[in-house]
Image (cartoon, rainbow, N blue to C red; front, side, top):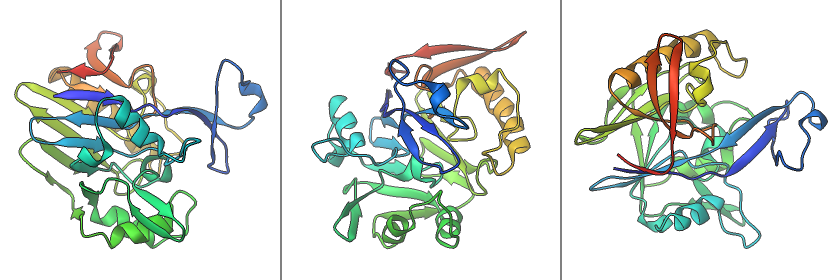
Length: 261
């Protein structure tokens, strides 16, 4: 199994929920009051039979009009049209922005040869509410795609990829485990978005159920430690791909670069 971080950059986010690029070398955090600062990093995973994309980034384009996630996939030696499977933790726009491409008034799948695996209740809930957290026009187009696979609850897409609803961050948020031979990786989406959250116990205001997310983070961390899993942290560039080990003082995080496990 090969694992790649598709890093899209660092951003500040305030009450408007807009993701504004933030370069710590030239930008000053003090000038962005009431903001949190996050990295954005989808993941590309190659197994023996699939090229899997876990979440799709912000959907931003570069000066040439190319999706950042397409450019980043190309930089890893693949084409976006080689992706066979897209699996979403949830559909907040910072995770789902790269699912669809807008051309005029129409939307088209950004990964035309992939099956999109999304929790049925997650997309139907997103389409039923008026929230700045979702790009509803894109999701309406997504809902009509023939390549959309609606999954529910807990199960597996194939013998290697397992999913289960965690809740916590959003009502129908799911976590994903990919196994191949003796290797395993775990993607906690926004329930476990940063490695540091395994060390600091806190209730996050941006979660639907912050206490549940806090409790789940420890459960997932312990499971990763016991099973020698590689953890994938979507909002943590420095430790995007890491091994987690329980210690007397909590957890030890060992960052990895793009990895073969």
